[in-house]
Length: 106
Image 1: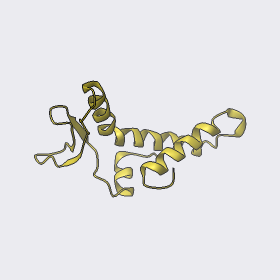
Image 2 (image 1 turned 120 degrees about the vertical axis):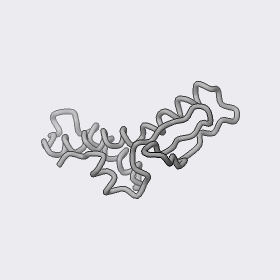
Image 3 (image 1 turned 45 degrees about the horizontal axis):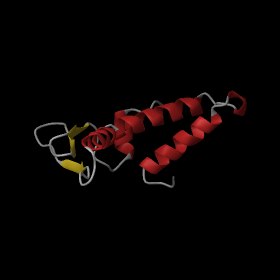
């Protein structure tokens, strides 16, 4: 079964996608509809503007990145990647990253 945004949303208690980043106030927010509740702020003290923007953008994209990791993990598992393919390390990294993102052990 492919991992989709809907599957991820059903499995997770976090705010669903879409998330967006507002560069003016360094805010990550839920960007669907008229109400845009804040999810997080990027700390701006003593940080160069490029870093603040980069941090905000990666945080806003985190659910899309998580969905892509879960889809790749699903595909590699479904096709039973063997140890001779060299993809076992990648599968382990995907599992570790998705577990950490879902609040499990990293």
